[in-house]
Image (cartoon, rainbow, N blue to C red; front, side, top):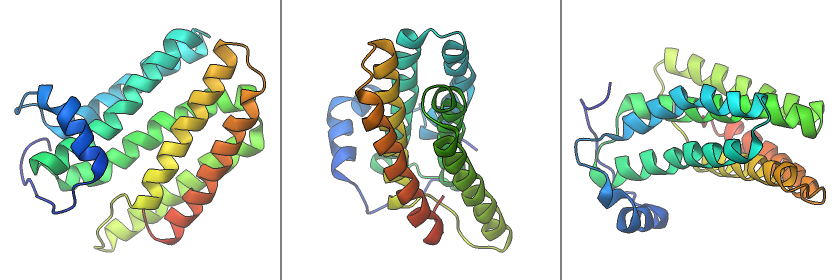
Length: 195
């Protein structure tokens, strides 16, 4: 699960090089990308607890740190040639668990149910289609549209939390806009069989 069957890639992105230069070099070689994915799943209930108990300032910091592990695990896997089939499937699922939890707790509370239901509904459809394609023998992994969607979801939740923490009601419109853009990219991801 964590270190067998490593694959290499020829696709190293600009953000991979940036993270490698300033952050990844401090991560020991025996600390594999899938550890970060697993951590994201395990840390999500802690972030959820902070949000449910309205500890938004600490929750915002925790959410950003846990969200950062998504960038770290992907860049680590690509730059060190440690891509695994497990990571291709469970990295996007870990993202969906984190963002879905935040949508249930924060978006329902401070935005509107329609936005939350759209995001959750599309994510469920994406997971179901990915599961069916996996069972039919197709490869399943994240695509660029799904990655953009994840960035927009994290941005939307972050802006919403900033609006709540610092009592900046004007930011709520930007959070809503980011989340609706994320819905559009989720649809594109769905139509291109990404996860």
